Amino acid sequence: MLSFALRRILVALAVAVTVSVASFMLLHLSGDLATAIAGPEATGEQIAAIRVQHGLDQPLLAQFVAWAGKALQLDFGNSFYFRERVSDLILARLPVTLTLGVVALCVALFVAIPLGVLAAVRRDTWVDRLALAVSVLGQAMPSFWFGLTLIMVFAVNLRWLPVSGNATWKHFVLPAVALGYYAMPAVMRLTRNGMLEVLASDYVRTARAKGLPPRKVLIRHALRNAVIPVIALAAVQFGFMLGGSIVIEAVFSLQGLGQLAWESIARNDFPVVQAIVLVLAMIYIALTLAADLLNALLDPRLRS
Amino acid sequence: MSLQPILPPAAPGLAPAAPVTAQPAPEASKLAPARSPTMIALRRGLSHGGFLIGASVLGLIVLAALAAPLIAPHDPYAQDVSRRLIPPVWHAKGSWEHVLGTDKLGRDYLSRLIYGSQISLLIGLSAALISGVIGTTLGILAGYFGGRVDALVSYVVTTRLAMPVVLVALAMASLVGGSLKVVVLVLGLLLWDRFAVVTRAATRQIRGQDFVAAARASGFGTARILVQEILPNILNALIVVATLEMAHAILLEAALSFLGLGVQPPLPSWGLMIAEGKPYMFFQPWVITIPGVALLVLVLGINLLGDGVRDITAPEGRN
Image (cartoon, rainbow over all chains, first blue to last red; front, side, top):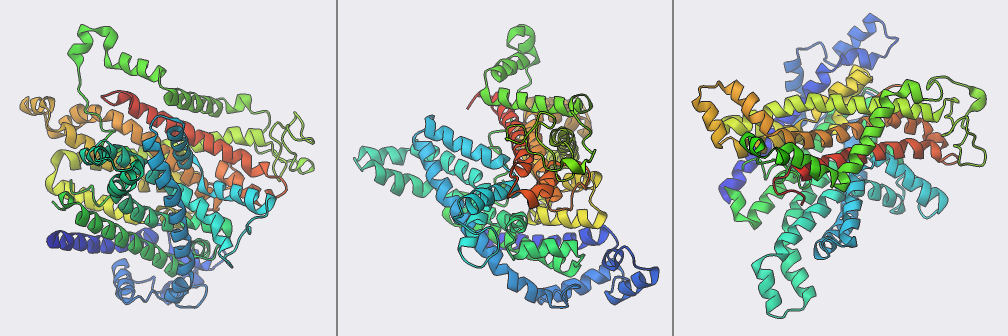
């Protein structure tokens, strides 16, 4: 287990380094940052001045080394737009996005796991079909449109919840549903398939044969085992949701990391964009690492 | 299976089930022409509800996109400020002149919707094509050679998965300047991970089979084996992933355009139509409902088609 863990941690570190190189290069090779910062009406001299001011006249490698060296100390430089430290900006916005992600994950799990269990227990009945329909719809629904539709129905017509902003917990309900629905299909299907497999297994048959009440067999014996891979999937989905929250935050005007990223992209505020890409990637890498280690801890066969 | 624990399950239910243990059976088809693989697949397809619905929906939308100049009642770009935001025909104030109403500039919504299908389909197809070439190349190489090549490809895929797609796509599109071409390129360059994972698994399953060994023994070069022996036999799995990625690309394009960094006005992208309708949605909800439903139906159709192909081509048949 220890050597497996060490190897996985090393891979995760290497991936983290590669991602930071890749994201840095992508941004720098996609266009001339100095021209983008200066705006369409800038003169050649202004562009040249900006180039020198932000160190963009240096070779790309030198720029990367300078940036990475500081990033290691969590210093991502200053925002072009806010004249503030990027790390402060991110720390101020991160709680909103994390709250959204956690609530969305809870919504997804609380709906998807019971639905998956029911679909497996009542296989090929209307419950199973309903679960399938929910998951097929979830995969086809544009999340931003689903968010807007939720606003129209629950905030404007029924007036149950606020339209946008992030002042109270009520503001997080609709965005969490919109974001969580996106993660539901995968969790639902994995729970259903896991349950089908476990329900057909010998130990469940033994438990039943012993005369244990069906509910106890279902929860204690079956669900407990079927849910193990779901935990790992949930960790990965959480990472995806943080990355995808940019669209939902824009729809609901939640002042989170995604909104900051979107605005910074529009303002050509590259230090901020670069730092957010890196932070989201690091969170994702940490989550998948945790999921892998957890899986390996629970299932020794995966350690090979 | 070094790749499995690192990667999230590619598509739910896809990874182990989809790769077909393609048994090329030319002899069988000669002996019993009525039961050739194509015929069996065809018969299964015709009795598979999801496949039929998906194929019909997608077929209709493709037809509409191709015949857009013939069937669109108006010019999708013609503005008429005196006829702004006319509601659709089922509203009290609607008229048959503009069946789905008009937008904030008085452009006919139905015509824009029809022309918009061209954009979605074009983006979906081209992005899936680009990412398909990248991902399949990586996946086949990793699956066929195994060992270090496999480790390297797995590493590249893991790295790609760690990058937040929406954010990176937005940033790249913004720097290069949002346009149809840029969106296609950016999505094509970002969405190849699932292709790589699935073709890798499918290739691993068949690389040890006799016909591959036979090809090797006949002195075929590696490139020829990969292209002529492996590729045709993982085609089914590839088609399934292609539909998924097409749907994925269409949804992402809509999101990018909605955020203002994808396809630019006045093109009638459905995501852009939703963005343009957003300020009016409280009083004229249909301005966002119509393009949203169009997106939903298109993506649903593609997904049903893909699920259908997976079921039909699976060796054990349906489920």
